Image (cartoon, rainbow, N blue to C red; front, side, top):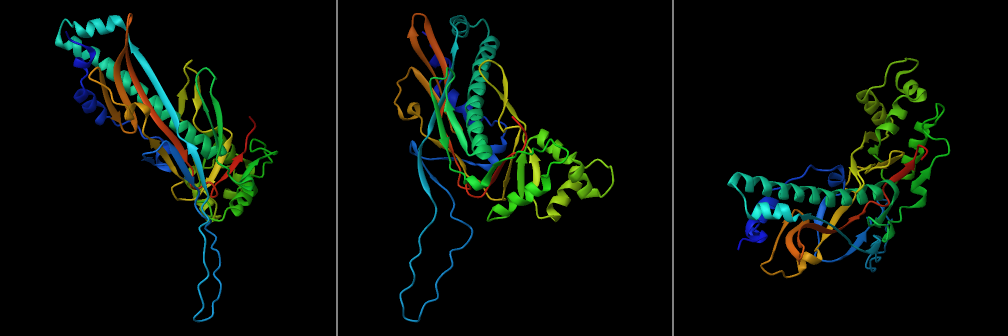
Length: 335
C-alpha cells in the first residue's frame, strides 16, 4: 500500500529542500549565518579597538603579560518550530490520484507549505537579530504567551539614548545628536540603520536642509545627503522596513520604526544555528527528513485515527552580537 513516505521519499525531500534559496534578509548581511554543534552559544564581544598601551622594558627583562579583553556570555540557543497538517482528504487524493498531473499538483502544494514553514523560521531568527541590533535585547516567546524570556546582550548604557526632544520636532537637534553619539564610539561609525519614517523626518528637517544647502528650499536627495554626511565624518543612513505577519495575520516590522543604530563597516555578529532535537534523533522508515539551509524539515504520520500527517520545520538559533560595544542605539521618535 502506498504511504505518504512513498510519495515524499528521503531523496525527494533532499532534492527539493537542497535546491531552495529564499530571499536574503538584511540581517543575513550584517549577521551572517553559521552552524555550531552545540545547543549553547558562547557569545564573545570583540575586545576594545582602543589599544592597551605596552610598558617600556629594560633589556634582558621579562615581558609584560597581556590579557584578552573579550567578554564571554553563555546563552541557550532557542528552539523554533512550526508544523502544518496534511488533511485526510488531501492525503487521500495524493494516495489515489486520477492523473500524474493531479499528483504533481498536490505534491507541489506540500512543497509550498514547506516554503512557508521554512521562511517562517527564518523570519523569527531575523526578528531576534533586528531586536538585538536595535535595542540590545530580544524576547523568546511562543504563540500563547506561556513562554516569555528576555535576553539582554548588555549594550553599554552610554551607547543607548531615548531622546526627550525627538526628531519629529522642527527644532530637533539631529546633527548634534548624531555627532554626540558618534563621538561616544571608539571606532567612528560609517553607516546607520533606521526606518523610512525616521529618514523622512531627518531629510525634511529645516535645520538639516539648511546645513546641506544653505538657505535653499530644495528637496534633499539621498546622494546629496550621503555626500554631506561623509564630509562631516558622520554615518551614511539607510532604511529597513521589511515586515512579517503573526499567526493572526497582523503585520509587524523587523526593525523598530522609531529607532536608529550607528555602526562601523565590520560584521556585527552571526546568526548562530545549532542541531535540532529532530536532527539528532533517529527516525525509522515512516519519516522523511531533510534540511533547507539551517532549517530541518520532516514529513511524518503521528496518529492513526484520525490520520495525522504533518509537515514540520524546525531550527535551533540565536543571534551572536560580537560588536555589542561598537554600536550606538538611539530611540528618536515617540512610541
